[in-house]
Length: 448
Ligand code: NAP
Image (cartoon, rainbow, N blue to C red):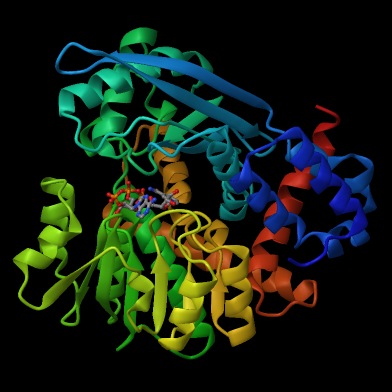
């Protein structure tokens, strides 16, 4: 672990004491604080106004009971969360995650990251996150609907187009957003399109939102490659996960001339040296909601490896698109041995601090999720723009806006890293650029 500036160490100690047991939140805070040493030296006004302490304390945290009835008539109980972290730049914005591992520490880590990510997009959105320990896997559509309706029965009082605008994340896709929107509309008697993003195209959604996080991550890597006079052409790529972010990252890699040779789910991974067949993958994961093992069964060029690590598959570029802390030091070492030159986080915090250190020591270019996966939330903000003006844009126009935003984030990271004498350090560039934008707004707003 690198040491912190003494002022930042005090802040970090306070975060540990005030938020016991929230390991992922501690990790996310520390990662940002490690970048801010040179900033507090240059900007004493942020210290005087206790900006960093205030940033580490959510503006509001809501925890609620979510009772619902399963298909056999049994009463089930889950816990719901919404953490409204920071509204200095706009309404709270960030996804909902439905996964059995969800607890307050995960929601807070995601909400904290979201503040800086949203700032980097340059769009007027604050940071928030929510979710539940509900597991949609193996549940019928009717059960998922009843759960979503119960979840929204409480959540509706806390959200709104000018207050807090949730979207999807792990376990929350178009189906869940539909049920959540339906219940919000029913309870409030308002057709408030801007209250949720990730909506269906016929009822207020935006083209490219489904593809945006995966596409955006690949656009970001394309900028990294171009800065080195290189391209995706002929590159071997490994992607973890096979959900929303992974599928559309694979699609864009193939469009840009690379080949994705492996992807995974929580059960194992599929290796396909001919390149992942995207139509088959979409059919297995999006239509049948089945396992990656079934992809391998249906394709002669593929083999399935149960358990194990997808990062053992040699590649030029690695795109972790599944979940937090999936690449620790051993997986990073395997990637380095396998020839990886660029690692970009499609997921949120998939690389541990030890993994990031190993990449730096080996000269592997590392793009943090705050920057590399910001395309999803940026396109959510484009969906909000279209809702506000009751307009809908073409696919080409929206995709070009996304590409332009990703180029802008890439440029900003590099320029900020240069300004602080850390050339090529995307982690420092993203953390410092995002922080300064939020901090300046907080100073302007006074002590609130
Ligand atoms: P998703 O559609 O639910 O897919 C998640 C994928 O990751 C699935 O293949 C899942 O496999 C795998 N996975 C989840 N938990 C895992 C675990 N503990 N171990 C191994 N594999 C696991 O979710 P998503 O929207 O693609 O989100 C993926 C990541 O991207 C998350 O970190 C999310 O926060 C981040 N992200 C998403 C967006 C967005 O717009 N959706 C935007 C920015 C960042 P199983 O099916 O076997 O569970």
